[in-house]
Structure formats: structure tokens, C-alpha cells
Image (cartoon, rainbow, N blue to C red; front, side):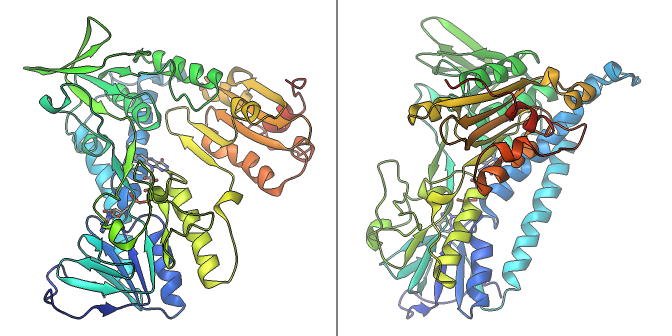
Length: 469
Ligand SMILES: Cc1cc2nc3c(=O)[nH]c(=O)nc-3n(C[C@H](O)[C@H](O)[C@H](O)COP(=O)(O)OP(=O)(O)OC[C@H]3O[C@@H](n4cnc5c(N)ncnc54)[C@H](O)[C@@H]3O)c2cc1C
């Protein structure tokens, strides 16, 4: 049963005893609550805002719903290339895009709420949680106590100290989702994952878009060739990309914001999105009262089993700095549940990193880039093919991008892959599965794949590896 926000009690009430407390309803939380409650524990799940956290309400779900609208908009613009004649140019109805997105978000959130509300042994407590000790958590005038506390509080957009930012209206990844209009000119500060997704989707909705990035290239974590291809894809849609942007500063304007770059250049935007990263929600959690240690950026320090510096307290999801994705948060749940309930000793160090960038075409990534592998002292062999030589991509008229696989020249293991092309986020799972199975790349190289798919070229490029480099 869910407790209502106004559940009566007083500050002097005795602590309410639970077997476990989970703070936050991020992506680890509901599944963990279910496992703990099924094991017979009394569980309190505390949420101060919307059930489902970032992924459901302000992250993956709404943005991927909007990316889908943006894809349709783009395909409508390109319809004649496919021999499909429309009566006129497509028109964007931003309010309708929002309605569709909100419906998907709401359905997902309601599903989670129903699950938690109906969970035997679980109480959903609404309010802001703050530690009072290593075992006590205060929520308003209620004091909850448990021997096991799981922190899944996630993060929020980082707002950096940009000169003039406090004098102009600016958007974050959260407030972008509430826009009912298409900006005349959207200036995106930050050329990384979240910024690029919004940049392309709003360009497709009809905004003029400029990306301003301090670094020498977009998404600098990726191999240089991949960064360059992504820039090309965005520039092909007339998105302006300003790299090496120094001395970024904001100037108020009657109809928007002037974004100063360098010594005397100013980009005149109607809207500015600040997308330069995220910060963990740990500053208002009373962690010091529990003795839970964090690093300088506020991320909770955990060991490979996600245990914090205090026995009986675990850190899961974005707040532990060991991942920044829904699937890493969910995997954190799987690791903790296996260790706490099943007597296993699973470790976060065993997982293979994987993620996607949802521009179109998407980038699917697993493991190391070639640069990371070389930095780790490995000699690598690389298999590569541009999408212009992938039949399925050509047939779909979506032949931008490439696919790359990195193999260890000594051990023959696959170290990583980047698939930037249609269905790249799905196709890369073939490589992920092969890496999880372990062994030489040759096994995957000899697999018969389905034609015509993007994935069918994975065995092919593994058969054409470069000499060791
Ligand atoms: C725009 C955007 C797009 C994204 N797209 C993707 C994507 O495509 N794929 C992907 O894998 N990831 C994506 N992410 C990242 C993903 O959303 C997060 O990694 C994911 O939600 C995991 O977060 P979490 O479980 O750590 O916590 P969160 O989902 O952030 O949830 C934490 C919850 O804790 C609550 N909380 C915080 N402090 C307290 C407190 N003191 N008391 C009570 N409750 C509290 C918060 O209200 C929140 O509900 C995206 C993120 C953004 C911003």
C-alpha cells in the first residue's frame, strides 16, 4: 500500500522499523524492492518526485519517443527520394509530439506505481529522504529505520559556472521536454550524448541549431573517426558545429540569448540548452550523518560489489559513478540482489560496458575504443566497413556511418565495437554477446548471419582484420 504524503505522525514518533529501505525509485529500485519483498522483507521505498526517476520521466523514455517523431519528420522530408510523393511539406505540431511523448511516459510511470503499490511487504513513501544516522532515514516527520539501506538517487543536469548564465533564460535536458514550440535557433552548449540527441531532433523539427563544444571534437570519448563521422552526419542536416569554443559566455537579448564564443564572435540564439553533463543527487541526502563517503564530485564511493564505506549501505545507479545508464543501474540491482539474497559474489568489474547514442543513425558501442585499447597497452587489429558498403543500409537509403570492431592482436579476443548506422544500437549486441561468451574472435567470424542485415557484416569485417597496429 502506498502511504499518502500527509500520513500523520509527529517528529517525536518512534522510528518505523523496516528490513530494508530503498531511497529513490531509479532504475535499480522497483526490481530490487520486488526481490527483497519476495524474500519476506518489509521494504520502504522513498521517492521525492516522480516514480520511475530520470529514465522514465526525463531521460530515455521521453527522448527516445521524441527521437522517433524526429525520424518520421526526416523521412517525410526525404519522401520523394523514395518515390513517395506527399501533397506538401510536412508540418510539425510540437504540442502533438509532446502529447504522444507524455502518454508513453505516463503509461510507463503508472505501470511502475501500480507495481510498487501492489507489492506485498513494500511501502512507497513520498517525500525527501535524508540520513540521520547509518540506520535512520528521515522523510518529513517520519523516521524510518533499517539494517539495510540501498541508495538509488540518480542525478540531475549539471549547470556549470558560465559567465552570464544567471542572467539569461536557459534550458536543461529536463526543461527541454516541456517546450511547446520549436525554437527559432537552438544553441546547444555541449557536444556530447544528450546535447547531440536534442540537437538533431530539434533540427528535424525545424529549428536552426548550433552546437557549441569546448573540446576539439564531438563526443571525445569515442574514436576520432567515429566523432568525425557523427559531426558529418549532423552537418549534413545543416546543424552548425562550433568546436574549440573558448570563453563561452551569455548575453541577454530581448528575443533570446547571445552566446559569446572566443574573443568577438556571438551566436544569436532564441533558446539555449545547457547539456554539459550531470551531477549526482547526493548533496542533500545527509550522507555525512551516515558516514557514507563520496568523491569530490559527490559520487558515492563503492567497491566492486557496490557496498559503500558503511556496512549495510549500498550505492546503485548513476549516484555511484560506475555507470550513467538505465542498463548499468539495472545491472547494479542484479549484482546487489544476487550478493545480498543469493549468497553470490557478483562484481561490477565483470560487466562489459555498452551504450548507445540515439542520433539517427544511432551509434551502438561496446567495450573499448581502439584508442582506449592502445592506451591500455594492447596491440590491436581493426575490422572496418563504411555503411556505403553495407547492402541493408544502402537499400534503406541510410548509408551514413560505419562499423568497426577492435580485436586484441595477441589474445584474439574482441575488445570492442562501434556500429554507427541503421540499427547500430541493436546490431552491436551480436558483438556484446560474443564478448560475454569469451574466446577468440574467430568463432563470431565463422557465424552464418542473416541477409540483408547490418549484423551480417560483423563476421565479414572480422575476416578482414587489419595487421596488428
Ligand atoms: C535526456 C536524457 C536521456 C537519457 N537517455 C538514456 C538512454 O537512452 N539510455 C540509457 O541507458 N540512459 C539514458 N539516460 C540516463 C538514464 O536516465 C539514467 O542513467 C537512469 O535513469 C538511471 O538512473 P538511476 O537509477 O541512477 O536514478 P534516477 O533514474 O535518476 O532516479 C533517481 C530517483 O531518486 C529520487 N531521489 C533523489 N534524491 C532523493 C531523496 N533524497 N529522497 C527521495 N528520493 C530521491 C529522484 O527523484 C529520482 O526519482 C538519459 C538521461 C537523460 C537526462
